[in-house]
Length: 237
Ligand code: PGA
Image 1 (spheres, rainbow, N blue to C red):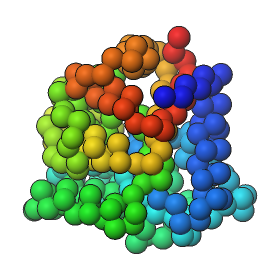
Image 2 (cartoon, helix red, strand yellow):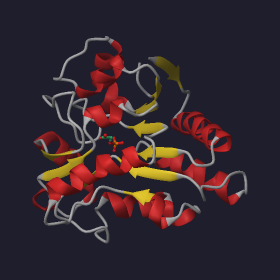
Image 3 (cartoon, rainbow, N blue to C red):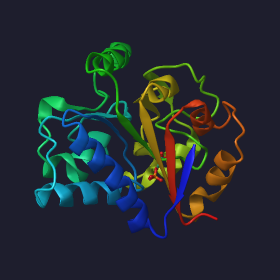
């Protein structure tokens, strides 16, 4: 695991953006694994800026998002699909048919999960998977206790995750109780992983990851078994 200390949130975002840009310049057909949350917003701004400056094009690239709530539509402002449109996809030239976000509003949610892994496999896998980390060490919506070998699956959200995500909803009662998420194995299948950690609320998670202990109690620790992970962190000791 490679650790890069950034001097600020902007610096973290720029370091991550450089890795994405270099990948895209090298391979126009790159497949990116995208993440939602406040942590990657700065990175997305950098990518939009680079696209608008004519520095790069996403016209042949593809992306797969990590997760989505179950029971809300892509038009719902709290959905991850909506977040991605607002923060990235509405502002770059990635083709709509090349943008994949897990489907959270379908009758057959189990099939949606299986289809998602199949779609990733069909395009040859993910070149760079972007991740944030939850205060409890979750990656995607893989909460503590999740077996490392799961692929895309349906999960119950923990209370701490629902509380952390309440800011995107009118009240805690509106926060869905379930989600569809790439499993830890899906994440581990990516060729390269970039994990962003920002801010004092992530201090404990950062320290636990840094300790090197590998346990399903702390889902991000699975990444110690991946051969190409870069952690870019700021605002933690
Ligand atoms: P955050 O979420 O970027 O909003 O802190 C990260 C996560 O919970 O995975």
